[in-house]
Image 1: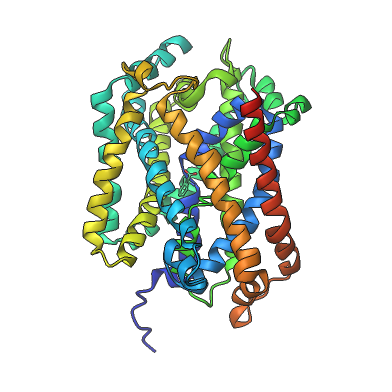
Image 2: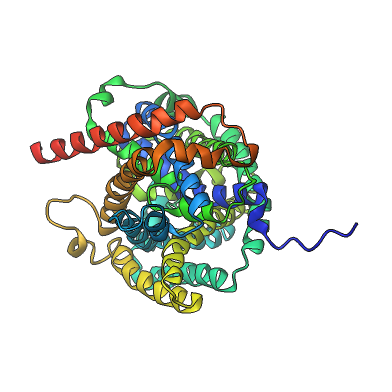
Length: 456
Ligand code: PHE
C-alpha cells in the first residue's frame, strides 16, 4: 500500500533526536568546554561538570521536554497555559531574553569559525605558537570584518528559519554530525600521539582536588552544562512542543545528553594533548582563542592538514548553525504565539540580535578597553557569556525544576512521559531529582557563588 507523504518530520523520534542533538552540540562543546576546563583547573572541572550533567541537567532536560510536549506551546505560553492566571509565564519570558542575549555573542564566535574555514584551507595560520596566537588576536580585532561575519551567520540562520526548511537542516545534520564525531576521534588519535600529550592527558584526567573549595568553579561547570545541553531557556520546551506523543521523550533525552557529553569530552581529548605539546602552553589563560590557537598547530603536524582543518571548521560551523537555529527559534515562536507573522518576527529579531552583537565584536579589538567594565577583568563578550550562561540559565533551570516538580507536579509530568504506553522505569528517581536535588543544588551553587563574589 502506498504510504502517504510524511510531512511531520518532527513526528519521528529520530528526527527529533537529531534536531535536539543539533541544538545541543555546538560551539559550547568544542569552543566552550575546553576553555572552561582550562579556566576551571582541569580534571576537577570535568568531574563537577559531569555531576551537573547527570544529576541536575538531565532531569531538567526531561522536564522541559515533558512540559513542551504536553502544552504544545512556545515557552511563555507553555507556562501560561499549564498554570493560567499565575506569573509563571515570566520564566518563559526570561528564556526568550536569554535566547536573544546568547545569540548576540554566539554569532560572533560562529563568525570566527566561518573565517577559519578559509584560513585553514589556504594555510594562512602557520608559524610559531606566538605567530598563530598573534594571528588570532589581529583577526578578532578587525571589527568591520567580524561585524560582517556575524551578520552572515545571522542571515543564514534567519534564512533557514524563514524558509522553514527544517528538513534541510535535519538532513544536513544527519550527515554532518556523524562526520564531526569521526573527525574528532581522528583528531584525538593524532593529538594523543604528539610529544607532550601525556602531560595534557594528565591535566585533563587527574583531578587536583583543591579546586573543590572554589564555588566559582561549580558555578562555571553548572552554567557550562546548562549551555551545552541548551537548557534553562526553553529551547527544549520549544523542541519538545513539536514532538509527537508517541515518541518516547525520556530515551530521546538520554540520547541527546549522551551525544552532547561525548562530543564535549572528545573535544578536550583533542585540545589538551595538542595544547600541552606546545612549549609554554597555559590552558588557564587562553580564553576564547584557545581552540583557534591550538587547532591550527595540530593541523600543521598532519599530512593533508589543510584539508582536515577546513573540514573541521566546516563541520563546526554547521554544528554552530544547528544551535543558532534553536536559539532564534525560541524568541521567534514566542512572537508568533502573540500573533506576529513568522516573517516579521524573524526579521525584527535578526535586526535586534545583529545590533546587540556589535559590542561583543568590538570588545575583542581596538575599543576593548572601552567595553571592559570597571571591576570586570573581562571583555564585553566574556561578560555576556558569564551573565547568560552562569546566571540566567541556571536560574531558569531552578525555576523550571520548581515549576515542573511542584507547581505542575512531578506526577502529572510522569503521566505525560508515560502516555501511550511508554515506559519510564526511573520515574521515581527522576521525581526525586527534579523536586529536591535540582532546585537545592542549583540554589546552593548560586548562593555560594554570590557570597564568594561579594565577600571577595
Ligand atoms: N547548546 C548550544 C551549544 O553547545 C548552545 C545553545 C544554548 C543552544 C542554549 C540553544 C540554547 O553550542
